[in-house]
Image (tube, rainbow, N blue to C red; front, side, top):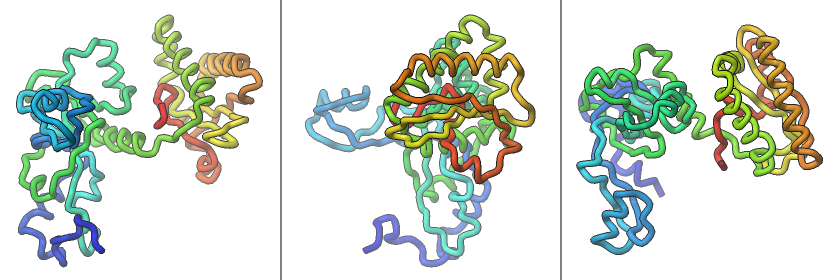
Length: 303
């Protein structure tokens, strides 16, 4: 039995509606289009958002709910991978849908949080800087909501540029990948390692912003060698730099931080390290043996 997604799909590439696939060749992940009407399935008996709360005033039960026109975003960000849009290398395209996320104005957000968004430190929000040239605001794609649209609809939309460079636009792929692939770690690891590290980094930023910025620049990502993600007994902390070794000050801070983690964990978790490595020098096979945790400030899938 075929999926409903397959029902009615063109049997050959040339049978697709005229111009759709060629138009999609111009689109890339991270492009901006007009936002479609947003609908989700909700429960009026257990409303969680303003939309479902409004429905609960008039209806009972579970039902599709449309975001009110007054709250509907102006734009949406294409989050599907570029290779999945036109499927240029596929003899027969099999993916009729593309995912988009709403872009909202978060100008009311406080300055500290706006800076975190610009730096990519709130992993479900992506700053789309060029949209402020169309309309004043602090425009942010919210990856907490992704919505499928048919490719025929996308092909008919005006394509806007949201990022200055291709490298800037690659932040979309990194954010989507992190949300999909970030590991689930045990509660003990989160409680004894991840959260204390973020607390220490926050304290450093409050007391010495320059040092905090240096740490953020010099440590490209961190990883752990762990006997089990969900029931760990031993954890080694590895810190990666890229291109050059981290400064003595950065290494010293991390050594002191891990010493504190080790002391506070006691017998609950054996913590070793930190070990400093270079991304450009470690072999792929050695890297794959580790659990990559991206930047130290980012959260895990079960937090």
